Amino acid sequence: MRIDLKLICLSILFLSASVFAGAQDTSVQEQRKAKLEREIAIIDRQLSENASRSSSMLTDLTLIRKKVSNRKQLVAESDRIIKKYSDDIYLKQRQINRMQARLDTLSDHYSKLILSAYKNRDARVWYMYMLASDNLGQAFRRYGYFKNLSSQLRSEAEDINKLKVQMEEQRQSLVALKKEAEQVRKERAKELEKLNAEEKQAASVVKKLKNDRRKYEKQLNSKKKEINALNREIERIVASAMKSSKPSSEKSSKTEIDTKLAAEFAGNKGRIPWPVEGAVVGRFGKHYHPVYKNLELPPNNGIDIAVSKGERVQAVFDGVVKQIIVMPGFNQCVLIQHGNYFSFYCKLDSVSVKAGDKVKAGHKIGTVDTINGQNQLHFQIWKDTKPQNPESWLK
Image: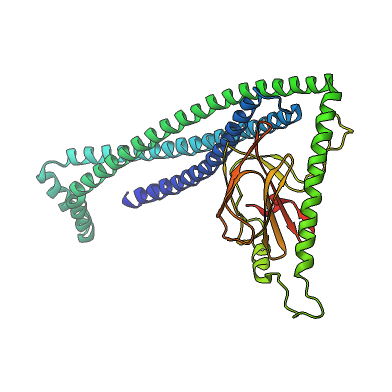
């Protein structure tokens, strides 16, 4: 019986480990949910601030659609967490059922031991039972049985009590799991309500854009000029930096490019820290207008990250501040060189570095400015004279 109890305990440990692993998965999902919720809060603040300004409708639509996307991910995360809870509840209930079956077996065996002890409570009956043995070996076995009966009874009683305590703990754990699962279901229902409202809001903005195309095309053309001017200036600066680093025939063959730093930068692709915490609302590359489908938007050589007002901006890697420029629509921009790689931080209000400064990853370089009601960092990464998709580099 002691061996059987060890087996049931091992089974409990195995199932508990499964539940613990599930709890870890749930923790990761909760972290993803928290990140999505922080991004939604940032977007909500921007939309609220934009309501009192003559902000671009396209900007509003971009923010709302990003929020809708995050909300859908939140619902999906809730679905995954609910499924995990359901699996954990099933495993926990299965564990309790096994324990109950084992308890029933132990209790039945214990009852038989009690009955046997009661029948043999008179010592004279014991002696007669042993004397009636067919041989000496059988007599010794019967003697051993009577001798161990009381200790076996105590042992069985201890096993039963331990199992009852374990079962009660598992039942309490099951109740807690069910409560947590129910809470997630309620949160999911609220998220769905918000999602429906946000989709209606997006549809309303689309309608306004369609009704006044000429006005919004004018806004877009103005924005195109600003973006194209920024792209040309960055291309010029990068080309100049790469050209000045090439050795001439009269100079040493050693270039100004920090090849070691460049190799470290390249080796950290996909692990480089973000310059700010926020929601990516503008992605790399060429895109078309979300409403006027045949209208191509100006190319984005980086990403746009919606952040909280006055958010701190940090360098993503060790490097040297190459230049600080001021551009219409982008305010101050800081350009940092990392060997033959460059990182660019635009739409800054205050700047806490100057050209020639050496910076480390995480070094504060400034704060995000509020431009046309937007608190967004425009961020780019270049390799030599070619823009890269920052999301491929950032962790």
